[in-house]
Length: 145
Image (cartoon, rainbow, N blue to C red):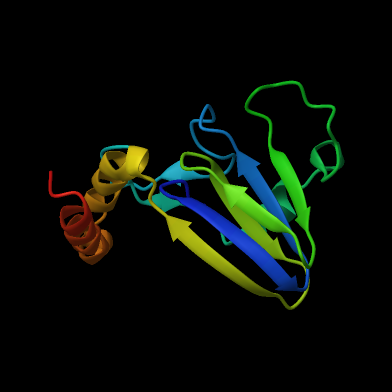
């Protein structure tokens, strides 16, 4: 599960099942903040592997193509096929399951309005310190003022 940056994914070959939850969802079902974390922003998450999460959570009433859910934090299911491009805005929880061998292009991006929140999230994770430093350098070079 991830929600710190915006991203797009263009599928060239294969098929992927996506599950997205809006920012109003505190945490995805079955996902918890890690025991060593003290804050939700950038906290390490305890989550099963995507294949296990989908196996446990994919129920007939939540299946892809079911649009009967009316709750604002209901999952959004996407059945991505070759030629489809999926855009995931920052703040949306998402995970994927490859239903076939897949070839895709993906790009995570930090939009200017999201830079501060992204840096905070990266700083909160010890293993992301290098990424935070690189992002700071790029922001400084492009936006010195």
